[in-house]
Length: 287
Image (cartoon, rainbow, N blue to C red; front, side, top):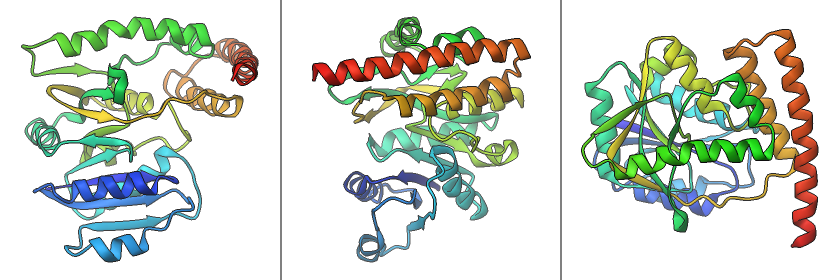
């Protein structure tokens, strides 16, 4: 038996569609909707569909981001005695079979903190669901557009490897994507769950670092997959600023970079913000 956390922010239609789908799963015991102080209200939906008391609803007073919102649901599941929990973004579609395989893997392998599976993104096809923990050099490159594109090329081979491998059952990996994964709640509780200093982005890297630091593993299963119907949008200056702040948390708290490295990171981040503003204005002009 397991529980699934869905973090909502103005995604009422996607969230309710996913909840109705998950309610058909045989072994799901609790679906936790956490609304991050959006305009949506699920009260009527829950009154209509919560006949088996499987839905729990939290309406938060503040939007504190991905990590803080999902932690509300994960902590609730842990306090209710669940051993295994899942995080699912509203825009994912996952089968009962995939969830069962991840659940069974976590039950049988108690040293794994987080497990996911292969991922496709709508019409774009296969994409990445795992990557390496970023080094300080990686963090510098990810501040700027061409650096991020270089990182994308680095991981393209990873994605192809996952889909072309027909013999392996799973890979041990350092980081899995945060759109959908299962987790050992005892382990997540022991390491403090997701880092709430981040608002969005980089929480998966910090989680992967903390798991590895404490002797736990992450994995991706190769015999199942999920669909992430994610619509990629241009990252404006404000969103890029949020990304850079989350990356800074990783560099400071996990990599524990030196004074001079902090100065260098700041230089790259400022360049990245200026570049982001220019790209956003230029793209808007072309549109």
